[in-house]
Image (tube, rainbow, N blue to C red; front, side, top):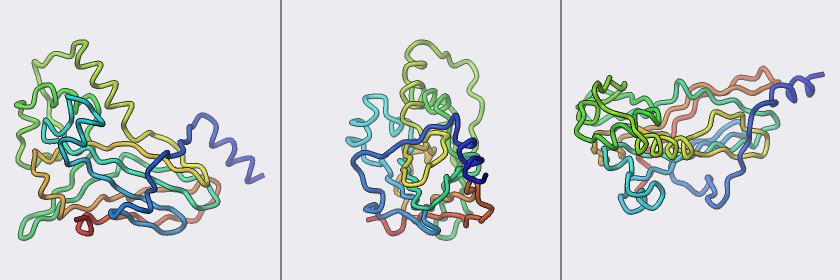
Length: 206
């Protein structure tokens, strides 16, 4: 009966096997209860351009952070994307808790890097950008960012899901040494066991 419930929960979701990169080889990671979460920041301009093309998020001071979730447990895992954040705690300063930006918003800031949203000194939540058009170029860029973004998906046992989150650092990429990627809300499907939060510490990264 329980297996039937799990099968039903998986209907309509897509799982993705990760080619190439082994998330266990990345320095920025956290793992427990059979689940591994690892991060790969694209803070190098040449590398970001190779992945995103000429209109890279770095152009607007935005960090593309590739995140891997590997499920080595027996049960499918659902990840709530709503509560994910990048915490930056610089010495002697208050904590900045940065929410991921939508592909729509990132596309706007890339094409209009001097907009108020790109220049905010403590960029947490997006702010409205009135008077900025969204033509064909914007839609094409938005669709590409969407394609590369971390999917809203259930991670099946033995599978790995990966994709990008976009965080507005206003170009202060040196602050990454003080960053932690925080994932507080994961759930096993078909099992009532709770999952502890994940916190991948960037200070271990060179």
